[in-house]
Image: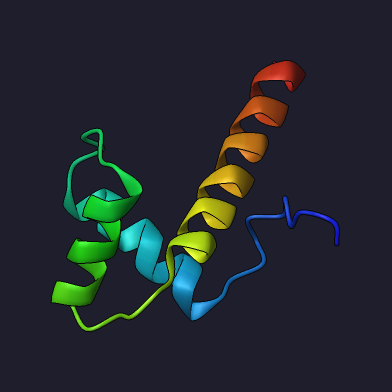
Length: 68
C-alpha cells in the first residue's frame, strides 16, 4: 500500500490529529500523548493510524522543503 502524501486528502482522523497538534501549540508529543489527548477530546484513534498520519505529514514537509 502506498503512503498517502497528499495532505489535501482529509479524513476525520487526520483532521482530529491536526487539531490536536494545533491545540498543543506544536509542542513535542509522543504518539501515546497524542492518543491520550485525542481520546480526552472524544476521538478513539489507534497508534498505528497516528504514526501513519504523522509519517504522511513529515513526507509532505520534506517534499515542500526540497521544492524550496
